[in-house]
Every structure is written in C-alpha cells, then in structure tokens.
Image 1 (cartoon, rainbow, N blue to C red):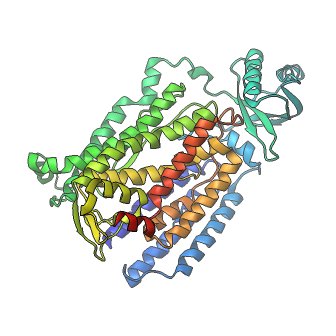
Image 2 (cartoon, rainbow, N blue to C red; image 1 turned 180 degrees about the vertical axis):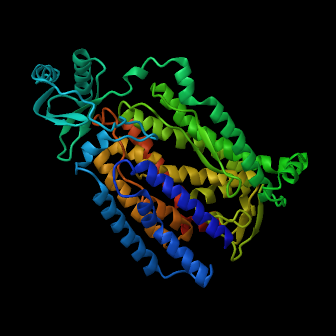
Image 3 (cartoon, rainbow, N blue to C red; image 1 turned 120 degrees about the vertical axis):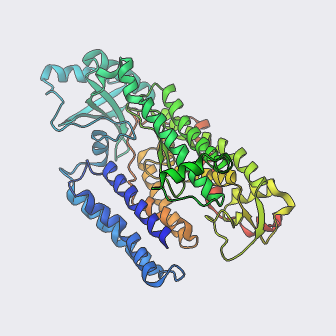
Length: 505
C-alpha cells in the first residue's frame, strides 16, 4: 500500500513537469489546474484503494468514465487558455521545446517588417519552375509563403534555402512543411541561433556541462547500487542514517551484490542515450551530454535524457536520431538479459506471479521475454514455471520495458518521431491516437499497463517539424521503422497460447 502511494506521488511530480515543459508556454490555463485534471483518474484509483483495499479492483466504468471526462475537460481548459487561435501548423513552427529542437520564441515580434523591396527579393527566391508563390502571409514571428510545388521536395528545399541565404544571410531559418490541405508551404522564422554557429569552446562546454553529467552519473550509480543491494535481500538502514549506511556500503560483500543490477541498468540506459547523442553529433546538431536522473528508491533512476538545441534538418535526420537510441539500447539489453535469464532460478507459478514481480515473474506476459527465457533455460522452463530473476535479468527486463515505452508511436517519444519521419506529421497524429487507445484497451486486460496508458493518453500528439518536413524517407528506413514497431508489439503483447503449447511453456 505504501509503495502504491509513493508511486502516485512520483507520477504526480513527473506529470507536473511534463505539463510545465510541453504546454505551459502555449496556453494561459494554470499549470496546476491542467495537472489536477490529468491526475484525477490516479487520485480516484488511490481513493478507491484506500477505502476498499488493493485486492478489490475498481469498476471498469469508473476508470473509463473518469478518463473520458478528464480528457474532454483537459482539452477544453487547454483551448480556453490559448491565445490567438492559430492552425496547428503555424503553432508548431512558432513554438519551442528544450527536448526537441525548434525555434525559440520571444516575448515581442522579432521579424523586421519586410519592405516592398525586400518582398520582391523574397519572391525572387522562389523560381516559378521550383515553387510558384501564390500568397505571402506576415505573422508576428513568421513569414509564410504558400504556393505550388513544381519539382521534387528535396531539390526545392535545397535550392530555395540557398536563395534565401544569398538574399538575407542568416537572418531566417527556412521550414518546409505539409499543410492541412496536403500542399507544402515554406515558413521563414527568425534565426535566434545565428550567433551560435561558431560556438566558442567555452560556450560548447557550457552546453554539454560535462561536470554536471559526471555528477549525475556518479549519483545514479550510487542510487542504483542501493536498489540493487535491496533487491538482493540485504536490509539497509534508513537514508538519513548516513554513517550507518556508509558502513554497509563500504562492505565489499554487500557492495558487490548491488553492482550487477546497477551496472546492467546504467549500461542499457547509457547506451540508449549515447545512440541519440552520437547520431545527433553526426548530423551536427548541438546537444547536451546524456544526463542520468538519480532517485534513492524504486528503480534507483528515472532514466536518462539528452537535450538538442538546434533544429533537425530533415525527416531523415529525425528518423536516424530517434531510432538510434532504441536500437542501441535493445542491442545492449539482449546479451545482458539472456545471461541474466540463464542464471535465474525457476520457481512455481503462484498467485503472486506478476509481470513486475522479479521473484516470481511469468515470462508469458511478453512474447519476446518468453522466447528469450526458453532460449536461455531450455527444458527447465515448463508450463507451470515462473522466474526468480537474477539482478542482471532484472536490469535486462527494465531494458525491454524502456525500449517498448520509447517505441510507442505517440507525440515526442522516439516512436512518435519515427512514425512522423515515416508518414508525415498529420498521419503520425492519427497513428498516435490509435496507439494509445489500443494500449488503453489492452490495459483493461493487463492491469500493469494501466498507468502507462494513462500517461500516454494525456501526452501531446503534436511533434515539432524538421526544417524540411516534406521530403520522404527511403525504402530502407521505412522497413527499419516497421521492424521497430514489430519489436514494440512482441515486447508488449502476451505470448499466444498456440506458441506457448509449441514451446511447452
């Protein structure tokens, strides 16, 4: 019971930070009010648990109705608090996010008025044989050029970008995006990062903050080691008894019990973020070093992240950066998980056998987990078997969960970026809506997924565009993206009974 309420507390903090980060700058509705609406279903579940206990499940109508009402109320409050109504496309181009590179807004208009002479220069940047301009709209923070595309999107963007730079220098960044009517249009926005192109070394170090990254790395290593020691069955003194805690930690026998979990989990998370970081560096996108988030309980960490501080040039770069993390993390997860499963103990299935119980895990909760368990344990794994996981297998299982969570094709998750790059922004929004509704339906059968489904249900579906957001991917990347979605499915879905019978588990 105490763990449940601690989890709700952490969920509330994460939700508040998510709302503040994603929508606070585009709506005047107070963040605390939006947060309260988002957290209402979780509060209802907590109240039910407090009154009736954890063994009595709440009625499905209570969950579904609260989710529906809160979704509608959240949307109404969000729309009520927005400023001057704008279409989705223009709003996306004018806003910024630290976690995804777009153009930083300012409090006052920063686009200098384009005089008649300059408008003539602007129109001359659009050759009629490349892109015939039919209308120019002047917005406080953008100049929108709408017209007819007459050549391939990639060639048009590159030629017009060259023309804009020749006429206006680095005054503008050029965005090429598909409109609601399916016709692509160009947007000129102020280049607030023009002065950062030749970034001095000192400023680059200020961006990456290696000292902060190292400090968080060490802190997360300590917190995950503490959790690993507790998972190994060692009783630790309270955190506020620092002297007693240090005595236990300086005992090599105790310390080594926590290292497999700590090193395994941090390796998986670190390689995942390094995949993003190195790919961003390949495309010359300014980004921070990976930052770990330490917590002294639960899993020992809330994961790791990087922040990109310059625009993504095209959908190809968006795809490569987004998919590099899950692929790298999954490749690191596989050998650790297989080795950990091979050294796990086989126990009998009981009522306590659940997905998130490392001492009695039913491998059939996941298709991929079941296949890997059978590969690692062979005939030891039977129809009535559960697993008491080795610490390294626990880290590998969390690696699978992290991979699946990031591959969900919703909003600003890696999977959301992937489907955006594959199908375009409009189609990605539809895919994201369908995906999170399917996960919500699945959570009615698999209650472990309910919290995940609630979080995704309130996650914004809109993903910021790349500069050239029109040029499509090649067939190879499309196939790789579909394989990534297939990987998500085999991690999330339970093992079908027909395959279980074939594997004799």
